[in-house]
Image 1 (spheres, rainbow, N blue to C red):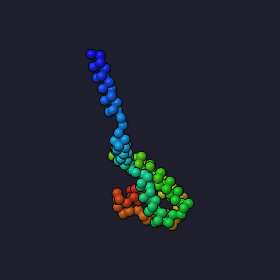
Image 2: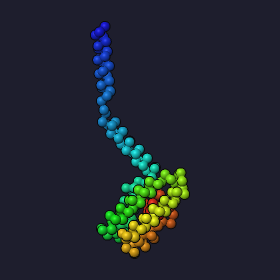
Image 3: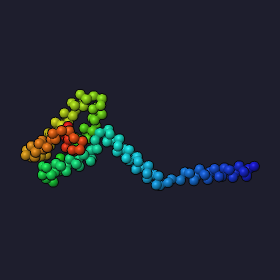
Image 4: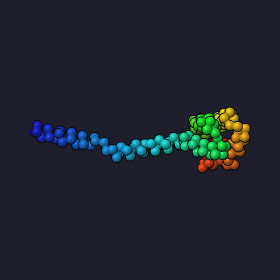
Length: 145
């Protein structure tokens, strides 16, 4: 009887050990799925700051003829604005008045900082880039709306 018990215990231990081995393909799939979910959650809760910033910078660089010295200043200003806008995005659903107030303040700060980084002519061009309508496909809408 002891032999049967020993063999059953050994077989159970072997089965558990075999099941405990990590399948790397499944692990990679799980990591990729988790990353996709995290990106979806981040985007749903706010703005994909990195992507939107790079799209905005591409448009601003060509439209305003930004110099190499201006690019990092403008990028830092745009990125900061988008991060702050993303941080208050939850208020849009819970307290629209507070959201509008904070967004107005953020826009004012954005314009002030850009005035320090751009020439007067570039600033005029920047303000004229404001889209007529809010658009989810136009990255510049994130700066003006």
